[in-house]
Image (tube, rainbow, N blue to C red; front, side, top):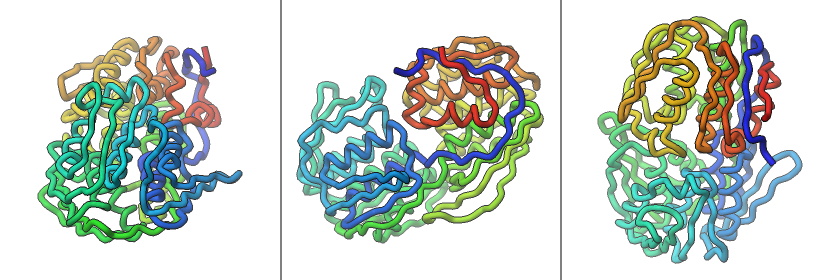
Length: 439
C-alpha cells in the first residue's frame, strides 16, 4: 500500500550523477509499433511505469508476444496485425497510451472496449475520435467522447487532416491508423509537435514525406507499408529529468548531472527557458541513440530571473509547466506562461492546481484561462503548504521539489500516482541527498 502523503523538507545541497528514467512517450510508441510490426523488436531502457506497463498489457491483449528478462531487456514479437482482444483494454491513467492504441487498433476489423481510471475517464477523446471517424472507424459509449467506449475499425480510408490545435497524440493516432488505411494519409500541423512517431515509423521501415509548412509541417504516409521489428534504445525522459534539474537549480550549493537525457528540440523547451532565466545548465557528451539526440545535463544552483515564455514554445514543454512554475517561484520577478490552455485538460486542471498549491506556499500567482504568471522575490518562498494533487503525478512531484528548497516543508496527498510516470522519483531524489518522508 502506498503512503497517504509525502513530505519534502529543506535539507541541504543535492549532489551526484543519476540516469534519467526512460522516456515515457518513446516507451509507449516502441511497444505499440513493435506490436504492429512483423518480427521481433528489442527494447532497452523502457520506462517501467504504471502507464507504460498498461500499454505493454494492452499490446499483449492484441496478441503480440511481450517478454522482459532479468536485465530489463524487453522483446515484442508482432504479427503485423492486431487480433480481436478478449478483454477490455484498460489504459490506467495514460492519455498517450489510449489515444495511440485507438489509432493503431482502428486499422483492423475488430471491436475494442477501452477504459481507464477515473482521471482518464474524465479526459476528452473527441479530438482523436473525430479524425478516426473521418477515416471510417466507429465508436459508441455512454458519454459521447469519454471512456469507457467501444471502437470498431477496419476498411479505413486515408484522409488529409489539419490539426485544430497542436497535439502529438492526435497526429500520432492518425498516422498509426494510416499505416493500415487505403491511400496516403496526410497530417498538417500548424505548429511542430514532438516527432517521435515519425522518427520511429522510419526506424520500423516506413517511408514518410515530411515538409515544413509555416511554423508547422505536412506529414504524408502511404498506407499498406509493412513494418519490420527493430532495436530501440529508449533515451532518458526530459519530463522526468526536469524535476531533478530544477531541484538542483533552486537548492543552494547543489550540483547534479542527469545522464542520457533526450534532447529532441521538440521536447527541450523547458531547458531553453531555464537558460533564458539564467540557469547554470550545461550539456555534455552530446550523441545520438536510436535516431534521437541525447546528452548529459549538469545543473548547478544559482540565481534565476523571471521571463516571458513564448506561447509558441508550449508544445515542446507542455508537461513541464508545473515544474517551471516552481523554478519561477525562486526567481526574481515575474515569469509569464501563456498559451497553455492545454494544461487544463491534462490529468487535472494543472493551471488551477499549481496556482492553488503555490499560493498555499506563499508564492504570488495570477491565473488566467490560458495563462499563469508566477512572481518570485529571488529568495526561497515560505513553503509549509499541504497540497491537494487530485492524483496528478506532476503536481505532486513539482510541489515536492518546492519543499526541498523552501523555508518550510511541503506535503502532498495521493503520492502513489507518481508511479504512473516516474516510479523511482523518491529513491533518486534521496540518492542525491533530498529528504522525503512518507506519512
